Length: 283
Image (cartoon, rainbow, N blue to C red; front, side, top):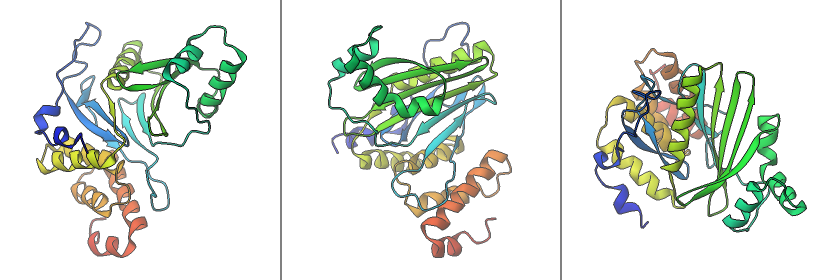
């Protein structure tokens, strides 16, 4: 709970300064808001290339036990960003960051390093297909590996963070048929978000931060996104889904309709009786 006093600072404290911008990235980012994504607190810009960003909550049948699968952000029609839920790695290692880095960065790896890298990245390579390039990264207290795969006009970049208490958590950027400038801006955005992220072992601190931001009644965009990201730390709390359904009741845009329906489905999965009682008339 040592982070709690910091997390309860006024909302304005958590709005990061705009980043330096190159000519290519003019109007790239105006301002940020920090959001919890599972064990991470990550800055997300209000806009990307002039488009307001709204989070998406995918639905999977059944009450969420500890985490939802992920939170999605459509940066554009051709670029998507996914904050994947924490997973227990199939391969666990207690090696030091120095050993990780030495193995990933070597051009000619020893048998031990080859086996180590293969086992650590096996799931991700299967999901990405092809033969991605793999490098080690370390940003402040975060360590992990970065994988990049491309084929013609398709590209995927995956940052997998190795959290201190055991799980791994991936941030995935998918690009398809995007312009070179848009793709470059998206890659710059994600690398900056990773560099500015912080990991927490105590989810209660991130939950307290979400509650405090929502208590300050931010604008619709921040409130919508904060409710979505708050679910990543409290997926079994009925109230979160209820507030989303109520907030999006009169919204006609496809994304909001989809989020409302997915939140409704989760609410029914968690407590059918409460859902029938409180969500009647919000179809």
